[in-house]
Length: 197
Length: 197
DNA sequence: ATCCTAAACTAATAAGCGTTAGTTTTGTAA
DNA sequence: TTACAAAACTAACGCTTATTAGTTTAGGAT
Image (cartoon, each protein chain N blue to C red):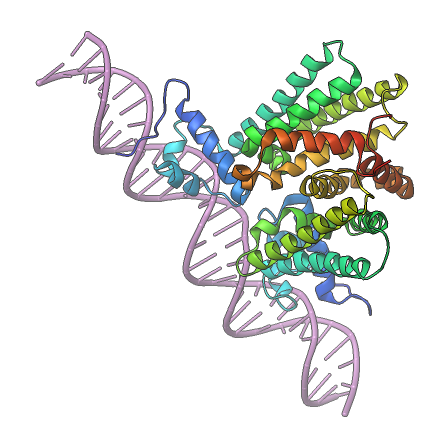
């Protein structure tokens, strides 16, 4: 009889969520069936329901885990008395490391949140909106302290977050890249631009 | 008897594709049913098949239309003798305008291409890879001409393309933004960075 | 008025979906 | 060895899916 393999640190539920994140990334939430998920784990579809509540619950778990990770880190950096340049450097580095080290979960949260159903959908969007508005304030503050150029703060946040999100295209050739170098290169472009002065 | 409304410039097929792009953007390809699409157009699902081949064909049409638009524009700019700074400014402005004026089609091409089936999937990826490698060459050439700072060219292309893609988040409040201003602000950040020198 | 054709309709197909109920297997502890 | 509980299994439910075949409608041309 087939069994889900779990260890002391990872429950059977964790195994299912991890594999779900992998498949949702690869094929999309709606196109991934419970039978397919079960196949990849090595059991029958109905067996999954001994450990999880529903397919939707899997998506919810992944999306909110990621959202909370980002919020927690933002709070932690906000509590320091670093300069706004340093705060931004820290949060950008965190986004990059999340992108590289928790690729699948972040990808699902970024791409499949639309398939959430209310009230989860509303909650998720509200949390993200709040997160972004706090980052806009970090830009505004940096401009006032003359650390940053006088740019549009909303556009700046959008540009930075989107650029980092683009690392999803990079993840495939993870083996071929030096992560530290990549991190520095992207930070360099976002902070200092393309053009030689 | 219900009828699909078409004009001299837009065939019934065009009407279906347009509405499909709208729904695929809003709900995702896999989560959009042909019945739903037909509902929005005002006919029965089976009637659609008088005008289109299949659901997959709709996705293919949208994805390759977008891909070809980008490739065509790249060729046109490449044929000029503008500086590489100017070439980059032109292609960025084109990406931004595609993002704002053909939002739904571009969104589908960016997000739902995974649902393509071979050989379309392979073709699509190959075309995109080629596009990106040509842009990398534009960065390399700009560095050699001392127009650009000595940055990692792959990272630069990724950063710029991803930042522009992020405009999809902006599209919702289209009414509230000045497009020209937005375009300039993003270009400014990508070219000159965040930090005051 | 009659005919033709475009384009709608209805009805049905086979396959796949998430999920549940009820049963059996399996490993562990008494 | 027996008893218990965790976690697998089989089978089935009721729905929805894309798509096809065959039929009917309706507008324009003869």
